[in-house]
Amino acid sequence: FTEITGTIDIPTAGIYHLDGKHALWYARSRRTTSDFDRSRRQQRVLRALWNQIQAQGIIGQLPNLWGELLNTVQTDLNLNDVLYLAGLGTQIDRSRIKNSFLDGANAHRFVSAEGASVFYFNYEEISQTLKSAFEPQNLNRAGQPPAVVEVLNGTANPNWDAVAADRLTWAGYGVARYGPADRSDYATTQIIDLRATPKGSRLAELGRLFRVAGPNLISQPDPAAEVEYRIILGADWDPCQRAAIGVFPTRTPTPTPTPAPQ
Image 1 (cartoon, rainbow, N blue to C red):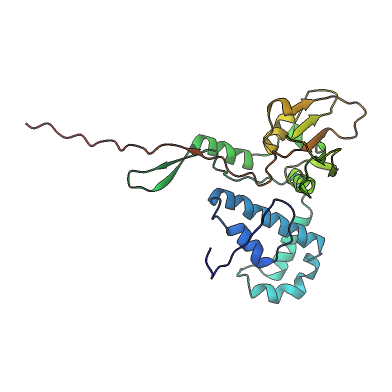
Image 2 (image 1 turned 30 degrees about the horizontal axis):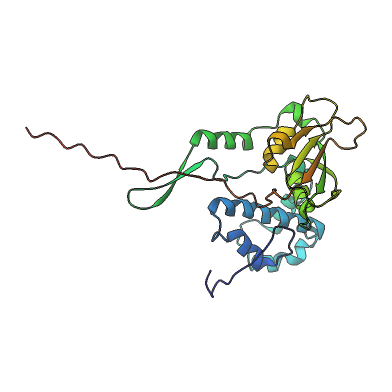
């Protein structure tokens, strides 16, 4: 950052109320992260913006705000077009909205012979990501209600349960409730499947979402449970979910064959 652009300091993960300028800085910053992480934050800002538009009834105020909006936004849509599209948006179930981004896990980083930092993508993995984003939802899954989850904050970090609940909602889960756990010193995050049968379990799917594996994915059937899954957040959970990028050594350029003298 320079004195011209300024700085933004968000010391810990949590819930923050940012004005437009700082929200833009948050979305665009890449000094300590990467373009991959920036794309994730851009999507997060758009989701937060949509939440606030709905919560504050901005759509109903569009006719009065239209002139002010055109001072900032250039579009060939007229007010009636925007009102129509906004109305459609309010009818969409958030649990049915898909979103994805390339987090760098399928990118290999190396330094070229010219000294440039280069990313090489596994295009087969990228094609699977695109296919998952655009293909219709499985008919069996589409007709089912969203899986119901309870989120408990087992850390001393305030609002982490609310952050996790928001992430679950955008991932298509139903969040019955969220709040503090029985204690605040859980070292690791646990995901517990409380359903009576393992058939159709989304335990592994939740594990990928929260980066939890092994013994912390627990099957504990409880016929009396009011929710299907319980997530207890531990100190190891990273709400920022930074990209995991493989680092590879510098590639040695292939030598050009020298023709043998005739």
